[in-house]
Image 1: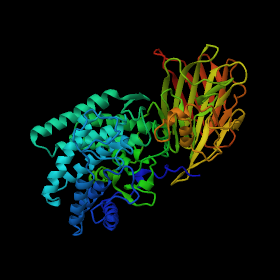
Image 2 (image 1 turned 60 degrees about the vertical axis):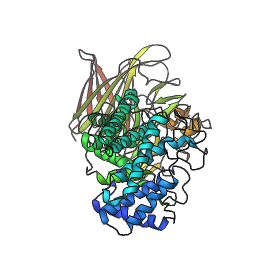
Image 3 (image 1 turned 90 degrees about the horizontal axis):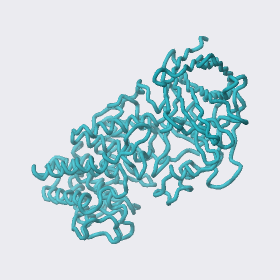
Image 4 (image 1 turned 180 degrees about the vertical axis):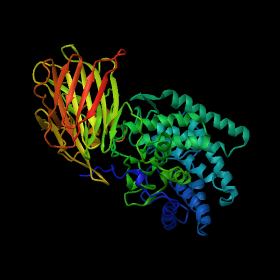
Length: 610
């Protein structure tokens, strides 16, 4: 079974001017066939996310008209714009809307669902989207839009901004992408206003960003990130926020948008596998955006010098939003407009700078979480997630159902590249149930094709093993599919176990259930509203790779050694000489030294000549 939304890398989408013209030509033909006598361009099956969709298609027709001078388009633009102004601008409060600060303000807004009171909670983002569609139309040359309609639309856009920032609480869904999108709308609107009003709206937009978004960023993996649905990052909405930050910087020139975008981009680069797989988020775990991410990934990938376009998007939404039948939906049209307008080209090579929360070389990558425990391991096209045992999740030594991976103190990291090898040493103080402080030293070494992991810890009583991951997905090139297998070898006994218990709290990788579906089943609220990250934390047990300790380790240590990417024999020896540990494999010799004067670990790695 393939993962529904994990499809092709976004930098593989053709993006020449000719390609974009072809996309717009297809949109034009479908829109002209669909347009009703009233001028409505909405998809016939559209029921929600509807308030801005016809206006979005109008903006695409206008862009096509600007690029091609198609004689059919001026009348279509006039009729469809008239439809939105006449039928889709609401000024009476939506019954049941819970986030008003001013009742009966009379300011215009866009509805998420047209029926009064049916589902008003989505009106705030729908109005943001409508504002963005409107300002894209206002950005078009004056002679392409009827002067009276332009004046009406400008007045409506003013009203959208006031409804969003005065009549309602700002960012009521605590969704960073929506909030930054609102800021972009204000900045773009300001450019069409008289000088005094322009400065007022621009200042208000910048102030809201600084006070309501930037001041409330959430810390994760060493980065400050715009909060998304009460979490630090969502793999669907995070890249959309990155696109909004790109557009905010493009239209305002304000450096804070570039700075915050750089931080988010480096964070995303570190958590993203070499193959572009990512999972996790407070709104979705595996539902990836498509074209909505392109602008931000391309713009900031170029700025930070890394190949963010490897991100696997939902390429069914490769150019624009679509309905299940493949028909065009105008809901995200503003992003396609900006994507076409932005001349930035993809940066296609990885960053050469080591990142604390990432190890990456060739086709191997490890993304580390905030505790410097792997969150995803990738080797030979297989992706491994942290396994679960006794309600604890991670990679690390296990004794009597206790996983030694949660740090009790500062985690030390040393990165090294030498002789075709890339290595990372993580030294982590941990405390077990016996309250004894131990130091787990995890060495990760890759030649770009395989990953060697060696974990050493002070000797534990009983029969410990290494929790070495949950094989979850595999790369089929243009798609990612589910798997319960992987090419793994161990220098000790190796076994792949599956939960003995049944039910939502026990994840068996052999079943067809996806990680996201399992996470939502355990979340406190319904799918789409619950927090899948929080739900997944309720997992009691999962499929797991378990590796026994290697023989002949130093008497005071338990040492575990696993290689990902190959099932061939693995032999690892570990010797102690004073405060040094020497790890020998057929591919390399590594020396883990005593802490330096500042407590930092020392590491040398030498490739074995063949």
